[in-house]
Length: 424
Ligand SMILES: Nc1ncnc2c1ncn2[C@@H]1O[C@H](COP(=O)(O)OP(=O)(O)OP(=O)(O)O)[C@@H](O)[C@H]1O
Ligand SMILES: [Mg+2]
Image (tube, rainbow, N blue to C red; front, side):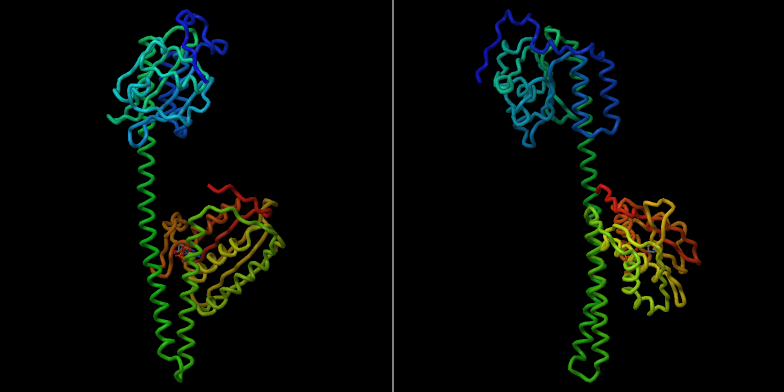
């Protein structure tokens, strides 16, 4: 599409966008106050930049505005935010940082430009007008700089009243640009901090897991050694003993890997109708041997017939809770696994109650933290973190009451109809 330069006498004509004249915009002071408030608020960066540049443009009675940010190499600008009547295709366009466009010149020289008539200015390139069908008349373009580092430019086009921009508009644009630069800089710093924290967490996690897995591998090695020593020999019972150690450590390995996977990914539960009594019985059956070894009795009771839950995920929660209850109990201890109705008819409660050691009040706030464990090398501290996450993904919640020396009760309050909560 070719572009016809505007004839000088056209300049005084009402501009193309004048039919969408806005009601009187904010005063410069109001605009700056609004932009500062936006920066202090918690809008996400693109929304903040869009609102901030629009507030500034409204105070200048401008038809269009844009924010162009420098690429990593510092060779070109990219349209980041474009606001105006005809913006088609601009977000894919790049503007070289050189003297062949107003924005490029401003970014290159780090100086503002106040251009009363774009087509009379030899830095202006009509290519972008040709691309969008927009007609540029008057331009303000100012650099965006944060702590001496160039970020890009902001550009404001055409006063809606047909006049050209003036020095007062330029001052306002520069003030808005400083605030926008602060917002971009803050967002970058926040992002860098989050990345550093994530890396630190990953480091801690890997170190913690490596230690835990090393212990399991030691167990596997010990079991294999016993089997090796006695394979084909007289003592079959030693081989069986070695094999038990190997199986127990494989089970621990599989538990820790499954817990890590559950914890690391957001997932929507696959809810299906499930017989809750059978689910409780299965979990108790699985842990019966472990309880018997410690002299702990497991008791189940259930008055909930069916509910729609992710059976595998909820079973894992119950396994974690019952496992913890057994760990906390001594010989003669009791662990009750119960399913019953809630006061809210849309919900039911899975309750695991023990007569074990209880949880000290100072630990209660931390037991759901990932890697919080008082079991030394025997615990990863993932069980309750995974349980809470799973229950929340179902749209439910976890409650706990504990009295040191008397016992602990965990309650999983779950929707009967498995309303999968959006992953956050
Ligand atoms: N029923 C309970 N009685 C007493 N303390 C408990 C009970 N359940 C949990 N805890 C405390 O909460 C901590 C965290 O439990 P969690 O299940 O998350 O980790 P863990 O059992 O230590 O390790 P694992 O990841 O192997 O489950 C436990 O180490 C323990 O101190
Ligand atoms: Mg546990």
